[in-house]
Length: 298
Length: 306
Image 1: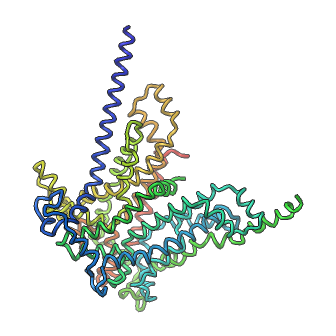
Image 2: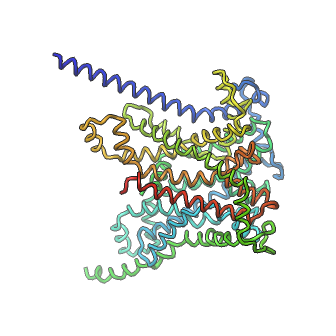
């Protein structure tokens, strides 16, 4: 009898503690989520305010003068940075970004995959040394190349062109090679042997077996590469001077510097810039998780 | 059977090196052109005095670029600022580990949604995020000071005052960095051997004891990985400072080392020059290498060896 009440009491206590723990966990997670989300909400709302409304004190959580689209109209149609023959700065910036990033990402992905395939499945002399060198390149900070690279491009007349932003990435990235090599190693050798016996060459194996079987890994790397290129700021900041060639990020930072008092326009620009990557992330989130955890470990 | 035996050595031969080396070294060839060549040049440039961006008419000055960098109080200030901003690293690690731990609780619903929310800042452009935070931190119109005024606190002009500038940047950095760590910590936590917890429970260990004696040691390789890459990234922090602290910010409170380098090589190349900028990049590389080496040495004391 005594024992039973003791058990009942302890299960009650246990349940109560679990309940308390869950409640505290929710409070913790929800407050941090608000911390993350409120800044997004604020720029979203501000982008729909009128200029006067955006500068009202105190700050208001919703537009007081109704929802306005002037900011977006400005951003999407006006040639704010000039020199564009009337074409919209942000649209041109978006197109420039695609011109720079899409070919670079695709070609870089292919070269990274070819290299990863060789390191994972082919036998050749110098494999270990090559892989070691690749490891070392990842550890050298990029800033050290900045000054001499700029001078070389300047000497070659390539400053203010897309070349410095595109060419290096097309040779592949060490991090992507590591990630893809890991993935390729998981593909059974028997498959490759069978294909080789049927007379398939090494490149045939790569295109007809390795690539189709590695779609998730390739998508993961492709997306991470695209987003990094899309968001790149330092490279375009240094190399692009003519407003016609501004990428999206530079166009946006130009707005921010020039239209300091027109917050709805600046915020509309920020929202438009953020939307594509957030949508890509929401659609492809599992690839992000894979891409990050697999490059991070082992 | 006979054809198989005949073919096999040929396959083997073909497997050896026909394409292998050529394919494998594409990224290394790229690195040799776009990495190694500039790297070597960077040593040379750091020892010369240059005319703008031109190699013509450069004069050898020995280590004087280095000595003028090291004797510039502003450079030391930039190192101090960079290290100060890195206070965000331990804070981000602790908070993200807490989040990941809480997300392991089976009673919590909507884990996927929380993970998505924390991760969103990771995919956002630094320019847009800097614009966002500059607005939120604004002394007059900003959301943060509005929220503070609700509890009768008069917030400072966060980015306009040298004392409040860096704390604000640290909060922003935590905001950006949580999601990446949460993903890595979550993966690490799911990999911890459950038998260890059961054994500890039999020995009467409580939640906190289990966390410190089992969880922390088990995930230490991941913690170490996060620490190392955060430190390397933190020492090169630049873009958000360049956007949010034009001209270096109040009393140069926002001047980081890479920002100093950018000024030396690009905005003020006439006063500083590429030789100085190169010297700065080498000093920074030495700092990065020493701190990383220290991290690896210290790791023997606390990271579980696998």
